[in-house]
Image (cartoon, rainbow, N blue to C red; front, side, top):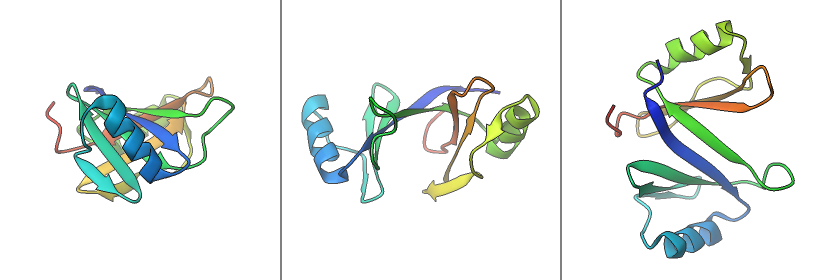
Length: 118
C-alpha cells in the first residue's frame, strides 16, 4: 500500500524568508514556488515549506507516504484505527494529501503525487 517516503513539510512563519533560507542552505532553487507552498526536490524526495506558525514547542514536520490511490489508503488507515483530522485535500497539480493521527497521536500523512514515480 505505501510506496515509500515522498515529502517532508516544514512549517515556516513567513514563506519568503523560508524559501530564501532553504534555497541558500540546500544550494538549489525550488521547483515549485507559490505563496501557499514552496517545494524543493532533494535527492529524489521533496522538502516542502508551508506558511504557518510552527506547531509545538520545537516546530512541526509533516511526513507524507506516497500512495497510488489516496482514497483507498485513507479508508484503510481509518479502518485500522487512525483518526481523521480533515478530509483529503487537492493542493494543485493533481496532487492530493491527507493527514490523520495514528492511535498514538503521531501525525500520519499520505500523498498522491502523479509527478513522482513509484
